[in-house]
Length: 204
Image (tube, rainbow, N blue to C red; front, side):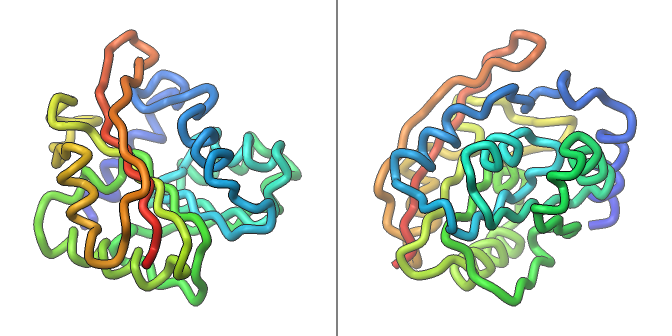
């Protein structure tokens, strides 16, 4: 676990976030899903692995008031706080590995773009399933995106578990109903195409 944490600290300490493969100037798909499913402005939203992502900036601009950002890298969170300036005080910043996450609250929306696919063994996957099911309110949403079965086999030098939309929805089927699923291409800052599987899962 420490190795993984050190890996991500090194990434954020040594690389320009706007040049990394997962960077999005505007996370259109995530924002479109939040709009499509009518997420209330007072909803509790958790961005898992949000780090130095710009999703939080756009959510604030849209008027969302209860936003939490979780990341394993403290450096990524520091970068985001500096970027947001005074607006950083409006966010709950959580420095944690997702499999160690034990919040004292539940969320209306759990957003995860490209974290879950780093969990390679069944034990960690099962922990993620348990944590997400416990801490998403009944009727709440899990918006999750991972590399598809035709996507890259690694990300940032680490192996990933690739999923079809069917396999992804089935993985969460014990506690969630899949309302929508789709594949989409992400173009990295260097011009590489990466195919993602997305699922919109509703907590039973």
